[in-house]
Image 1 (cartoon, rainbow, N blue to C red):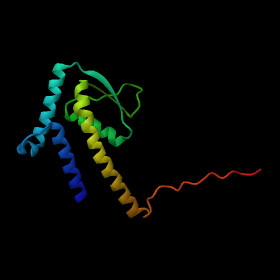
Image 2 (image 1 turned 180 degrees about the horizontal axis):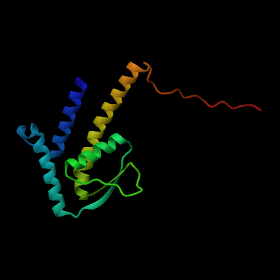
Image 3 (image 1 turned 180 degrees about the vertical axis):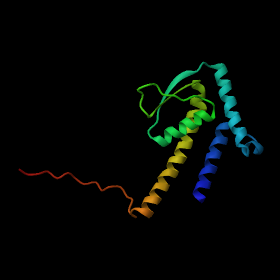
Image 4 (image 1 turned 60 degrees about the vertical axis):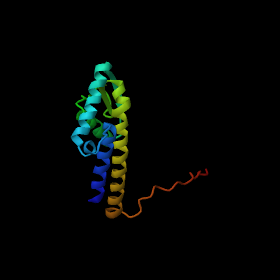
Length: 145
């Protein structure tokens, strides 16, 4: 499927952007990009003490993406007992969250959300019913009596 190939390439471009890849060789190597981000994290960990940060993620897809991104950088996402399923906790230098992790997550999430929405709409249109427009808005009728 061509759309999936395009999605994968967009995700790689975002990864290279946040890795700060400078040369053509670096742009072509995903492993080098991940390594660069891990270096940024290591530098941040040396210069600042990790703080506990709470993230509230709206849906399972966003949460799954965020947790995977954390694990990619060898961070340990967790949740405390009785916290909501939408909550993810992380001990990480705040600078890394603000300058890399959260920005990269938002970019990736935007691309994936758009892809999931288009795919879902296409499947509903093809398999359920062609009209996928939103429900009509009508004024409430007042009953007499």
